[in-house]
Image (cartoon, rainbow, N blue to C red; front, side, top):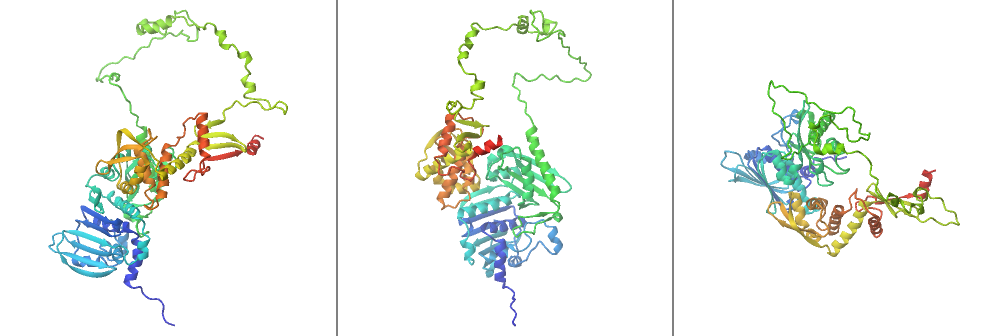
Length: 623
């Protein structure tokens, strides 16, 4: 019987490895930019065309490579970071396995121009599908210039299942942000189809966060810093009022590497349990410095999942550090004095003598005893004002208004409320029903509308019901293009992140159709010149951020899904809030509007709007 097991060809093995390491264009950005950081670059320029489908270019001014190193860099498991197995437990660089470049070259056409510092001639190497196409000397700046074209050209199934350009570009931006937030001392630029999205100069960490996510986030950041024998934690967490349902910026970094860690995320959110509404998230940018021997970054191909040796201890340290930061912010009270009413604090003079102040009082004074004016608060009038003395000198006697008996006239003809209204007698069949004097609907705790129905007691969530009503109304008007715009007297400005700018460019027509009029002020700042009619008093910048966050993942062609996301965001912003007191007519309007909707029972995101407490259940509870 012949042997059936054979070694895979290198080209096939590289494609299999590429499937783990290079999942989409964002993976290429991550690997190439991390290599540039490891090369000691002080400036890194990234450019993409068609969200990386057509080309990806990464240029750095790092140490560069020799001719031999440039060729070996594309061999599998060729690395400058590891010499023996123990080196895996003492890693201080981003890349180390030697899989990134061969994986990229296996599924794309790659050109590398590189030159070492101090050399006169560089190397120009071209590869396609793991095969060397050409290698020759060239003139180029010091550092490395990678051009990756036609990604997945030889794996059509992988290329076919890439998402829309907007989604892929958002993924690229997310990968880019995770790196620039770790290295604020490096200058980064990012261009998409020739348009500059980022120009990040070297700066401090807080300024880098502001440069990436906009000026609005600066006022929401609280510093976190703690140092122990187990780890050091630094960075920033958001104030409770910065919480939002979607789009919260949440980042963990360990030894300069981005990581996902639900266990540590739970530690942060536990601090905010009673400070933010349920389901909302706060931003955080937290950096861990841990001994490399105590972590394992090699448990996942993309190295975003990291195993800690002392997870429980770090959880407690993180929880305490965040709680201290939030507690310090909440506990600091500000005493606001006006100019004229400043307290007069005498200057302390050493050796000066101070006497205890004397207080005069009348030990026989009884505030419940009527006096003829002879009593006073103190025995000496020196410490009493004229107004106070006049008040104390007047006799205390209740004044009865004239014709007081007319106030109660007619009461003998009215039924006693405690018998006929609160505790009506059960009518007999001959007497008929007693006319009901109670309101048709009842509001409970500013949240629920309670009304009687044939089967029992119906309880309606007023906010959710109004969301459903407005959602269907806005959706209908969006489809019919009937949203009306209203100019604002004082335009507001709003700063968008790069990701939001990408989504905004895709939804520009839909945003205008909603009734918004936005004018670019340069960079990522826009002026809000008009808003949808009836949206006065709503936080419009926050609403726009919510809209762009809701629709960021939608496909550009799925216009119905985009309309639904837009309508839901508008409905949530304009719906009756919890705690608003409604009169009977307003409650009637909500109920009638709800039962005219296509879906009465649930909100657009699947939450129940009402429930019915059955009559028989009420009778059973009362015995």
